[in-house]
Length: 156
Image 1: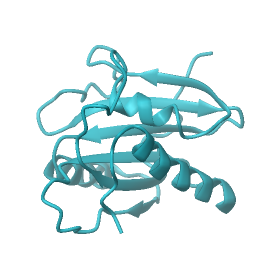
Image 2: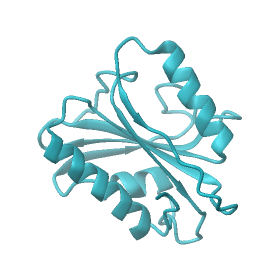
Image 3: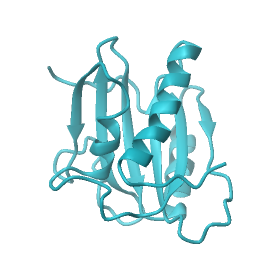
């Protein structure tokens, strides 16, 4: 199955601060793909991007995300997971997306946790038209996936 991202600029964004952990991802699997694989039990595709395959060509560019994965579930929900090295990189990404945004989105920004070890941020993008119960399921699975992947969450 070929994965096509319908819209990059509208959607629901969930952001959690996490601390790095050596067990964050299996060998040859990015942290973004490891998290995406756990978001829904009905996934039909997870694409683990590299610098050469990233459609936005931002993977590994200084100040951008360090890992990116796309996923699709059996209902046709398509989303992305991006991992950032610093809160500033994450903030710059949000600023860029807002500047280019052509349709509304809902965002959850990372609260200040006061935790100096929270140095990696993970962004989940999912379509805004999801029913509320599906949105809540993705939110819960996102937090669980971070914990299962070795990323202790530091959000409130």
